[in-house]
Image (cartoon, rainbow, N blue to C red):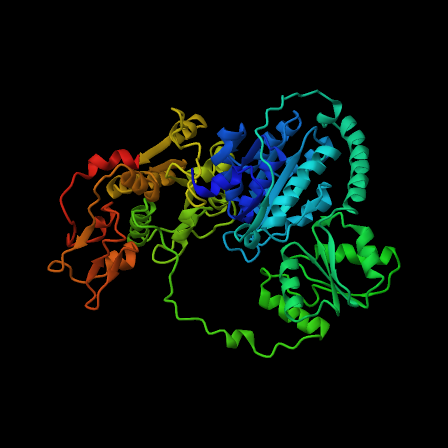
Length: 633
């Protein structure tokens, strides 16, 4: 077992250096979690991934579910059945689970239920910059935010306790920077838990209107109890004794505290560290506000805490100036430099002597555009698809989706005119096919994304007659987030074949091809265009080949000798098709424009051969490529 996972189950006292997400997983273990679920999504994936590594040892059920709503409902049902449970997802994943989220507050739970939302300020791996603390206001599920990995672990344990005590779901909000930073975490005890599942049917679990109205009153009573408990939460603390009060929730506190300590301002300012975001700990906020000349709220994204403080001060008739998002941008994540500038401008107590942006001289780093990995099965398909569209001057709209294949938006492929949300490719394709009758509508989606949210849209395409070409890229994993399983991943003899599923919902034209076989794709693609134009029918092309990183790792594991390809300099004419249009990162131009294949990057897949019209690309040593197919399929 990997050393980091041994730390996750170490029962001894002491400290471990853990990622924020690993710290949440450790907290769940110390709290006695028994059921854990998720759909993979950066920056949340390591939470459930870590728990999966130790699940068998500690008798925990851990599952990568087909989407966030399904994951939420499974963990929720466990919490209704006397099992401590946790579900984790990235911020947009909570949108998928939002229907269940709202109802879970009405039913309450019989045992702990912790919901982790990992937000992504600055959109490092997401399509938007959403602040999920706002969900708390409409769901009546309290939200908490740790300031470092150590507190992430301790707060997770506390939320399990609170949820169990109040019989109500609790939300832990993480962010990318906190999820992926390492910090010292004090370890508590981890014990193997074997409680008995027990579900007692109650009217509150049946949300028909007559029951839901009763639940609404019970929910509001629980909310008042939560507010009382929050007032004494040990994670909300005050540092310093000055007249200027800086209120900083979560990770913002770590930045603020470092700056005020660096400039020796704790005798001129007070810093209120907030871990409970909604409801606010009103008692400590009021106590500190009445002693303050000015209040500065430093928080990422939306003015969630600031607005609540303004409402509280107005209600209590406390007249003190509050500064916040009128000076702090809503866009993008906080940094140490941004926070220092905020404190300089709003307190006037420090003077930054240098222009940080000009002072920091970044070393020259050659630009690295986002590219597919060497051997990626998508590359030859998009290469051939771009050739066909350009050569035949097809009038297309290509509706894309969320996954590795989003990279085909960039040059040289320039495929995917829209990318909006999980499953949105086929959904938008329905709309485009309805109004753009003279276009070839192509929807591109991955296998995991198809199972996650693409199936209903495809059913709609068939039932409501919105003909399009759907290309499902089946690499048999959820590759972009770390190769978590998809329903198309073979597992204990179980595997859901996409072709069987799409035929079952009424798709007449289904093609299963190997994306490395560009001739088969060419034939299927043209047949699909014909079906669209002449029969007005939807076609599905399933391009099946394993993710290159998985195939390569399996070959290395089995000691398979891998022979890279090379470019024969006597044959190469320097046309640039291989490195400019096929664009494998293993292929680069030499000074004379002739191509060169880096043997350290080449994985010997041979997919680049189709890009050379002069047959200059050859294997370093002849070998039977077909013999390696067992690693790719």
